[in-house]
Amino acid sequence: MPSTYDVNECLLRNGHGPCQDTCINTWSSYRCTCDGLPGTRLAPDGHSCEDIDECTVNNGGCSHTCLNTLGRAFCVCPEGYMLDEDWKTCVDVDECANQRSIATEHRCHGRCINTVGSYRCEPADDPVVGLSVNGAMERTDEAVDGGAGELEQPDYDTLCPTGYHFNTTMGDCQDTNECSVANGGCQQHCINSDGSYYCSCKYGFKLDADKRSCLVLNDSLRLADIACPPLFPPRHGYLECSRPIDEIADGPNGGSLKITNRPGSQCILKCPTGYRLEGKFSKICGTAGEWIGDENGTCIRYPQPKLICPTSVNVELHPNETETTTVRLRRPETDVSWERDVQVEPDWVKKDSFPLALGSLNVSYTARHPVSKLHTECNFLINVLPGSPPRVDFCPDTQVYTIEGRHQSVKATWEEPVFSDNVGVVTITKSNSPGTDFGAGSHLITYEAHDDAEWKSKCVFKIVVNVNPDQQQQPTAQSHFQLPILYNRFYF
Image (cartoon, rainbow, N blue to C red):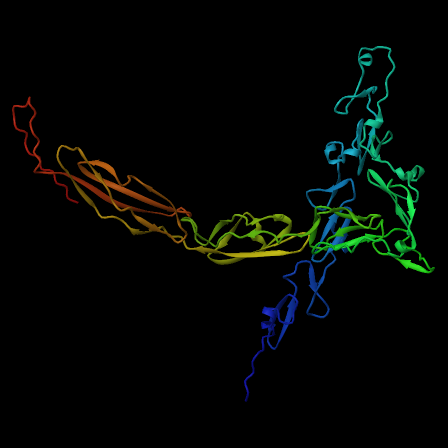
């Protein structure tokens, strides 16, 4: 009779089997889970994982806008608000408290009044007669002294840079739309931009040297289809381009003629999910058939999160503990938010300290980038061992020395003791060091080793110093008698 055996379908695809995430083998079958992909659940097909839209439940806990992404959701605030420390509640930004956060051309030059989600500018309370060198409003001497001189209004035209004008209602500098007055002096098209403007011409014309007038092209030039050359985006990016209104115009022989990259076409660099724009990339096709503008922007991939786990650690029970001990771990090194972007398995290890029984525990960390969703994993072991004092691997024997000549002491040296421990010796204290001078007699040398769990052990040995019995002390010139010979021996 043939034997029956189970086929482990999960061995395929590096342990995933037919599952997108986790494959669990069962007798004669298998099942899939999505536990390894937070923010997802098993799809109806029983194999793939589908995103859970957290925004459908209580708006994801967000006070304003909830933005669902694959694997998790984010709270987004409207302009004039910022996320509070809970990453869910939008709180008002007090622009007046820090006007450096406001673009220079929009700062208040009088009083700044904060409002919910915005701010407004009002004239200063005191009569204003002019500007100091730093732009602050001040009184004239006559106003300060109570004089009867007339108050002089500030020259608002000097408050703002070229291309901007001072809005006395809002109290800030705003872009001047030069095209709103006499078409900016342009013969055909006037295109306004922030702080400036430029002129362009319809199909069949080119801009004259004065940058305002348009000259008619002859048929040969008209057929040349004046256009800028193809514009290629940097690696990983793509271009989003806008065309002039009259891009589709009447051709020279009637009908419709479409021209790409016409003068006036504007292209900006866009980066896909997982990449961010670094620098600037904004180009406009000029009337001479050349691209004008910044092109130093690139799409930089969001880096994979940094995550460095502690090395595996051994801890042991303290002398007063029998089954469990308190383990304290240092957090792994990471460049993402510890609370928001780092997951721990088991999750209770994320606490700064926790009790742990005898045995081993495997701890794994996963750090996910909040935008790119790239993740980094690391793991290590915590081993809880029974408590035991450090082991004395080497302890010197008794050392015997003899004082020679007229010396009163002798320099003793020895090979120092060696200790080892199951969790590592932390400190070693000693009563004396090699090279110490000792007088005649017996001297106890003590080394004591301590480990991290406060267990300790000692190494004790002796230094015995004798006096040479053959050494006779010579009398001095004043002596009238012979000193006796001293015999000193020490036995242990």
